[in-house]
Structures are given as structure tokens and as C-alpha cells.
Image (cartoon, rainbow, N blue to C red; front, side):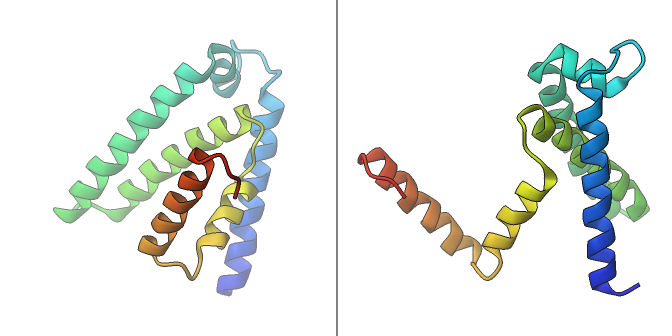
Length: 129
């Protein structure tokens, strides 16, 4: 599989998961974990995102000390999953995130941060970007 094939497969997998999440919005909270998260509202899945982010940090630290890297992949998958629940809840899709990341390609982190600050200044001063 080439890198391009892998990217397409990854994008397809994210789109498929997004479709499943969307279908769970009207699901039975007693039969679906995702439906339960949606029913409980943002506090439930935002709490999970915080927990999963902490677990990613801990897994990375464990890898630094010799743990299997698959533990980090597992925790990042949990973080991405719960982040995708949030995206779905707010009517967004993984493609929206991919588009934003693509926009940033070629910008250094410092340039991107400076651009955001300039855009915010323009908004604060009553202008638009």
C-alpha cells in the first residue's frame, strides 16, 4: 500500500466512523455508548476528551520508558474517537479538521500563530478577516 493509498484508506475510515457516529445521534442510549454520550450532552464527551488526552500523555511517557508504542496508538485512537463525537455533536466532520490541517501545511508554527493573532486583532478592532 502506498502512502497515498494509506491516506485514502485513513480518510475513508474516518468518514465511515463519522457516519456511524451521526447515525447514533438518534440511537437508544441503553444500547449504544455513543448514543448515551449524545444524550448526556457535551459535559459527558468533553470530560472523556480530557481523560483521554491525559491518558495519551501518560502512554507517551510510558513509551519514553520502554513501553510498547501500541499503547500510545490505542490511547490516541480513544482521544480521536471522543473528539469525533464532539465534532459530530457540533455538526462538523473529520474532513473539516483535515481541511484545517491542509491549510496549515507549509506554515511554520510561529507563522500560523502570528496569523491567528493578527486575525484576532482585526476582529477585536471591528474588522473582519
